Every structure is written in structure tokens, then in C-alpha cells.
Image (cartoon, rainbow, N blue to C red; front, side, top):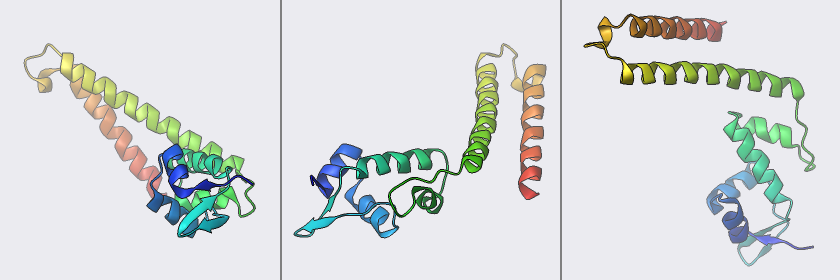
Length: 140
């Protein structure tokens, strides 16, 4: 079986060796042997590291990711959880789009003062309502 040295895994994946050791301690990845003090990993570790990176990018905790990856190396991806996370990402995209549009308007607004600009004031009010609505929903 071809194995990858921790340094090679780090170089290929961009994940620091200290993070690889942490992931191993957390049960996210597993080494198969050691060469001296250097951990050796199976080639499949690269796919697991990609899945971990995707999960982190999506906002999952390492504990949630560990639960999805499963101990036997076969991912168990709960579809309902993934749908909820995708919905949350969609909401965040809408919020960021509104923020981007507000910033562009502020940058391009011809009004002498932004507080005199009715569009700017409306955008600030809409953003404020959205934040209050999100905070209320988060409390429920």
C-alpha cells in the first residue's frame, strides 16, 4: 500500500502538519503507520481533507464534520442537515448582496451627505429590519 508522509499530505493539501495531527486526535483522519516520528497516511486522506475543508467552508463545526465522516471512512451525509445549511447560506448570500448594494450606492451617491439621500436611508432601514428579524428568529 502506498502511503503519504505527513509532510507530503501537508504540501498537497495546504493543511499544516499541526492541523493534521489535531484532525487525527479528533478522529477526523487516521494515520496507518509511522516512519520514525513522522505519521504516514493512506492516499484516501486527501479526499477526507477536501471534505473537511468543504464542511468548514459551509460553517459546520469539526464535531459535526466528524459525525458526517463516520469512523469507517465512509461519509454519512445527513441530507436534511445539508439542506438546512444550504438554506442558511442562501440567507447569508442575500444579506451580503444587500450589504454590497448599499456600499456601492454609498460610494456612488451624488447627494452632498448620505443622510440626505432617501435611497441610502431606505437601505439602512431595510438592513436594520433584517438584522432585528434575524436576531428574533435566532432566539426562537
